[in-house]
Amino acid sequence: MVVHGVAVVVGVVVVLLTLTSALHTVVVPRAGVTRLTWAHFVWIRLVFNKVAHPRRDFLARDRVLALFAPVALVTLPAVWVTLVILGFSLIDWGTGVGAWTEALAISGSSLTTLGFDRPRGIGRELLSVVEASLGLGLVALMISYLPSIYSAFQRREAVVGGLQVRAGSPPTPLKLYRRYTRIAWLDTLGASFALWEEWFTDIEESHTSQAALVFFRSPHPERSWITAAGCILDTAALHSSAIDVPHDPQADILLRAGYLCLRRVATSFEIRYDDDPAPDDPISITRAEFDGLCAELTDAGVPLKADRDQAWRDFAGWRVNYDTVLITLARMLDAPPAPWTSDREVRVPPPRFIRRHGRRRAL
Image (cartoon, rainbow, N blue to C red; front, side, top):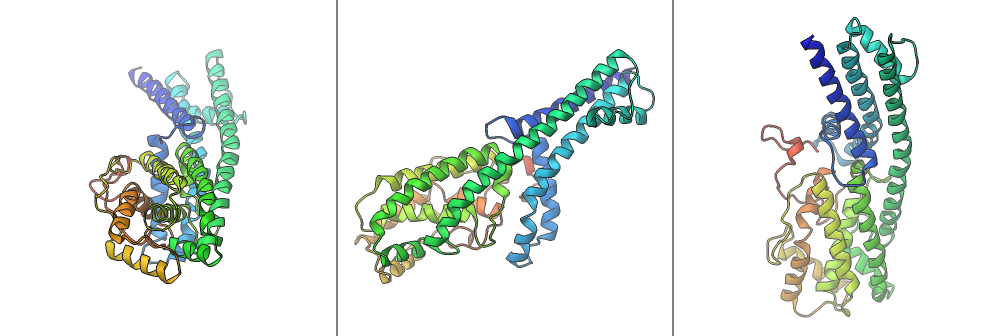
């Protein structure tokens, strides 16, 4: 009798934890990933990492990793359904159904509503009705979940694709400023900053409440939402620090929207960072790299401020707000090669959920 009672308790816990995971993943509009969802994504990523080995070239890895998020997302409901079946099997067996196999058959029949096995007794029949309702609810959740995922993905990629026209592939501030200067359009750059402010706001909401979106790769291998974010943030930082144009408050607002967005995405994956860095804290960009970019901008005819030292201090003071989270997310996503984003490394402690005996995280 004690064993049967324990089985009922364990079954109830399994069902409740599974439903909690489904609700947090699909319904609750708040950043945060349950342990079950974490474990599912991490273990699937481990399998993909074996195929997309770092020794392979980027295009080969990209073809493999492009399947990671869709596969993990589509198989997640199967995990929920399996756990609910197992949980109700324990409850059925603990409440007096004969053999474990019979309890499993009743649970599977009830959840899938196939009706090939019917329990005896009004109590067990009511339990089967509850299980069938939960099964239909899980299916309904996923039917409503997938369209919202792909709608957010399309909004994201429409803006990312537009950046390629202006900043090349991979996108860089140098290409963007060179093109805008060539067509005498530099004074209109602030208008695009407003668009990107809205884009970052949308990314913050969608990529924290629907964490799988972070791993959805762009339709073209050379594009990525994280390298686009790095390019436009560096462009705004240069606009506010080094480019000799009238000060544009929209660039400052864009920078704040951008680093808050990336920080909140990083927080949802438990990536650690300094949320109040000093303006003179070190960044991954060196002064020599900054001076080299300024020299190329000058050659392209872009007007620069005369005080290069102050320009560097101002640029570094903006970059320090997003430097760590930008590069860490780019490495986590195995982003395509892009200057000042995916071409360098910042070491941070691995997220708590996927820490494994001191080893580096899998994602």
